[in-house]
Figure (cartoon, rainbow, N blue to C red):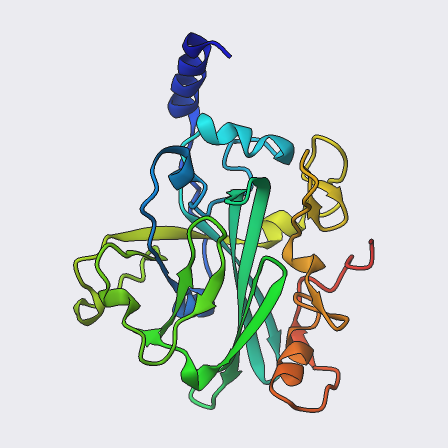
Length: 282
């Protein structure tokens, strides 16, 4: 492509690009929204590939052009969330989508799932934190998770986007040249701030993507059930395709919590579960 054409496309993208729209977020979601720490010393396109954003950041719902469009569209930090409620817990999911993985393929999606136990005083206690990145599952007991003003602290690795929960005595927030991101409206107190750069991210409901789960085909959102469309051989999946021993991340968050905490697995009594309908279309 000629340089002049690239410049024109870039100018048009900057002119017509819109900021991520603000959407009302449930209090429980904002209360537990994670603080993200990332040490990123890259620049240019390499830096852009480390920005978690919305899947339609380029203003269309064609996903097999997301890598290519990194050249032409500005990126705004955005994190998806999901809420499933049972009679004993809130299961809160937070998801990071990237248009490109550092290993040279299109799309990456990571996630963290919090099992927050309900307490009589209407507060909550973190029982378990699960992470998913690059097909790998990790868990950390809630009492061993570092909370900054009540928000779990996560570390994201540049390039591969590996996600990990910070330990109880972590000093991530104190490290120099560490980029720290928190949900809009939940800025950390002064006792957690250092000389690092602080930024905000917008919270977006995962239901906005879930509603397009049947948008399948070449040049659309998904190439098949739960997998983002791409020209690459590596296929990257959305959270409703994440399973561990036949327990689904979105469908069975309570049962997953029981499994990872060593308790007998039994059906949970869900009070609010927007992802139960339509998950069988594989």
